[in-house]
Image (cartoon, rainbow, N blue to C red; front, side, top):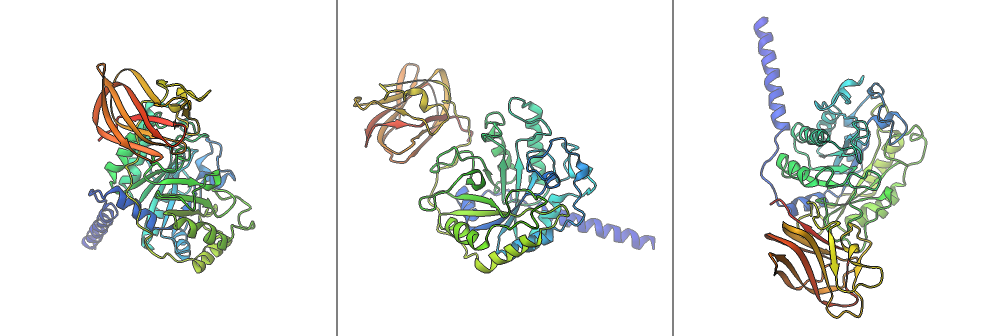
Length: 468
């Protein structure tokens, strides 16, 4: 009997090891970003799942000291979630691993403020990824940079906060198998005020790609950046509940748009009895038109405090599935520039220019605001604009961004040891004009405008020293 018991135990251990290996079978061979973007858009429609400590407080932003003792989904059934997603013909699910109040619903080693110290004591992320994969669905994760419990807030960020973020993302991308996308929130938003420099975006981006090269990373708060440029994200994002809108006529970027099925993101006590959004409207006004402009639509469905979807949500998802089917890959995306992910060296630096038009002076073109512009005075025949670093800096990327495209021909130069050297001279009619080149050193950068179809203007002249 003892021998049988040992053999049985060894078999269980071997089975567990095999399952762990299968789950962590993460490819290290990177696909081109263009292919990853295409694959993401081709998924068309998925499920956002906001489920965390706010579920138990009737608020999306609970007290950051809310006790873990509240989190107790006694009937948690991630298989129900997955089957509900399948009933709507969704392709994937995305779970809020940590929201703005800092509670982690996985077995993290970085903080005690996590699900293992709740009455539930099970890794919800593990339950989620297992159930969705078992149902043939892709898996994505949501993670908040803003963390009010751990006091990771504006003007209070310390090195240990950055280390915690890196450790948590490492856990999420190391222990749960292949993750299609990491959706990050609470970064560079008007309400979070944590900039891409406070928590360096480039470092996090490279960490994600090192852990999972084929994980698409996106930031939910890129709305301040022009629709024509990829800034701090692999995919353009539009949180429609926050008033962000994608053009249903002119979008040419891989995109994501999101809405909740109910009136807010996390479950509220009135959800079971309050009408959800109309399935036909969601199909005809969101899924179909968004898919037609290379936009993936993600619909949030909030589990209740038992860890289950309410009946009205289940009914709506089934109705969506009757009205809409995934027709497969969308139109092939155009070839795009790699996203901008570095610190803008030109922001707030001394600027100079030829004569400006009234108050629209040179400082408006490097203030990190795309809705203000330096505008050349109409009397100037050969306008120019210049950034002065005061000392030499290394850089390898320059972006000329316009609020509305008007500059077509221009020359870009940099000054090195008192000598001006040309980086580019010619035609570029794009609204976002990206120039990448081998790293050079200089103390000034200048654009000389040779042709514009009306008054020349620049919303932002940006300079980057990208890691390559």
